[in-house]
Length: 212
Image 1 (cartoon, rainbow, N blue to C red):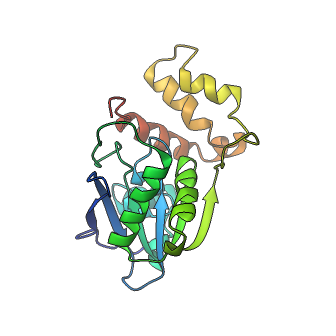
Image 2: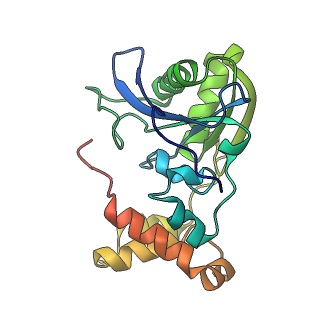
């Protein structure tokens, strides 16, 4: 990966209701624009595997073997959902539709419209709302590990729900490991333990603020 400066990459976006959202735009200006929407509780740094510029340093990304970046050939925007990371928390409850409007505000401010749209997990639900509410803003839609909900929804496995609820009363580090390995196959955990340990350590160092 050729290091690219993140200077001037930060963008503060004002959502329709006045909530301030922190975003970054990386990659060559004028390249095809892509907006990435993170999942529940994740900051924009959850996309660091696809956009290694979001790692703490180029050396950290290289040590884990993640050098190719979407921002090499694309203009990529990432952001913290409202109430997460450096984005503000607006008063009152929030909805997926409202977060869809947030995503459009970020895309328009950081990239211009229309843009390619990618959503993972809850971010995929947000992306679906964007397409329904603002179809002219989206060039293509890519959905990862997500669902539209409804009666056909496949619920999380019981072991996932148990880990989220910490039914076994694990300490912080043990619970962090249990949650980290749930996202990978047994083979990947064995072969790339360094990546799983990085995920655990990152999550422990950046806990979700439950009050937000």
